[in-house]
Amino acid sequence: YFMGGLAGLYVNLRSFWIHRNGALMEARRKYESSSAAATTSSDGKDSDDDGSSTRQALKKIEQKHFELFLALLKSICDVMVFSNNPGIDLHLKLRGKKNHEGFHCLCGLISAGTVLYNNFPNAE
Image (cartoon, rainbow, N blue to C red; front, side, top):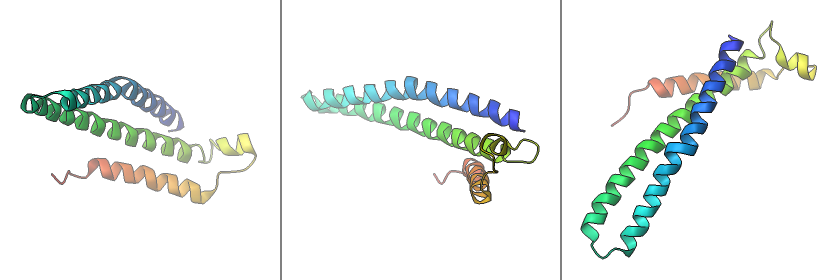
């Protein structure tokens, strides 16, 4: 489980980083340029439609970024939980004492909460 957790952490961290520096940055740049063009433009109707579509695209990309953040948070919590299990005891080997049980439980609850949030149907 621990090795699977580490692999999941690597994949989720890489996906989050690529999305943050790629699609999200590009969408924010387009939105800022379209909103700047809309304020300087005298023809408000065409630029408003373009601004609305750009805003919708940015909102969709930000939603995807939040989903990737939740996956990364779940992976981090899973690694923390699995590294404290008997047989692995990473904290005991590195720090000389086990991880605090309260923190262990909190990470498990956050991990379970992210799964419930992802599986709960949208209210839309």
